[in-house]
Structures are given as C-alpha cells and as structure tokens.
Image 1 (spheres, rainbow, N blue to C red):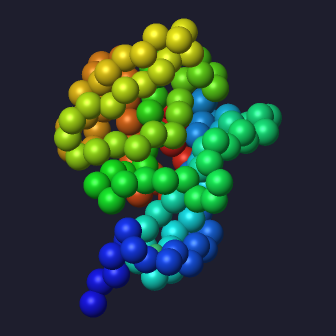
Image 2 (cartoon, protein in one colour; image 1 turned 90 degrees about the vertical axis):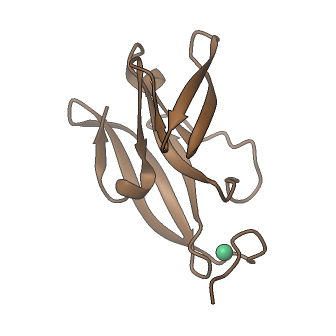
Length: 132
Ligand SMILES: [Zn+2]
C-alpha cells in the first residue's frame, strides 16, 4: 500500500547532494533529504560562501504535483546564474531575477521552455554535478 505524501508524518533521512559547477568549479550545491516512508524529497539550496538564510521552519515545502529543479539564467553569471525552484509538469513559473525583474516562464513536462533559461531536475542529478 502506498503512503499519502501529504498526510505522512515524514521520517527524513539525508539522500544526497547535487553540485552546481561552472567550468568544473563548484559554486554551490543542493542537499536532498528523503522521507523513508513516503519517499517524498526535500531540497535545500546552498550558495558557496553564503550562510543559508531560510524563510521556513523545518523542511522546505513542495506540493505533491511539483518537482525540485535547478533553474539556470543564461544571461547572468556566478551565483546569480542559478536557483533551486519547484516546477509543475505544465504551466508557468514566476522567477525573480537578480535585476529585480519578475518574469513568467512557460513550463512543459517539468522543463522551463525559454531560450534564455534552462532547467535540470534534481531527481536526475542526485550525487552528480550539473554544469551550468
Ligand atoms: Zn513521508
């Protein structure tokens, strides 16, 4: 019998790390935890050299129909080039860019569909590196 991820009293265990690289140099990472019961995943972004400032208590929230992903802004450099985001299968995502502009990007099959951006699902990259 499968466990409902929304009513599960999660038992979180560390699952792995995804490194974010530019020219093979790691500039940040995403830690992934997973519930041992319902297998739901929880991720946290870590920018190298920056203390993580969390605006939540406990595990980061994600809806049942969303997946964790790395958003890459191709027009920005360094730590401004990426963020951890949640993508729905289809729809749009609102993104606040480092220049304070908010853009709405189309999402198709858990991928950002815009030539100035790219996205990578964490599910496919746990304990691997993503070259951005
Ligand atoms: Zn759970």
